[in-house]
Image (cartoon, rainbow, N blue to C red):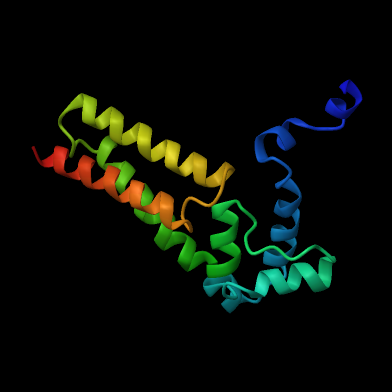
Length: 146
């Protein structure tokens, strides 16, 4: 048992084995043309590249949302999706939320969503989590105006 634990790194503990896909995503993204860097290659092309060029078992997602978005939808898609989250977080820091408790809650939830999306994955793409994100953001927005 202890020999098995010694074979795993801290990154493996955090990413649950998905850290290998980071290298694949980097290799795919670094070979993109300028247009592909901006707009990505779409949803299925990274899977095709991973299968054919890196001999990996096909996977739909890298299960790390920032990498999925960057590889599939490019810098523009990444900027739109995560730019929205940063915009929502900026309300906590620029004084638009007057209530200290709501400011803390908004900051905490925003940071946790970005962290969960970056480490656990399936936050941006999953419909189940999206409904909860919508409810939380709507509640925070409503409380902000009270």
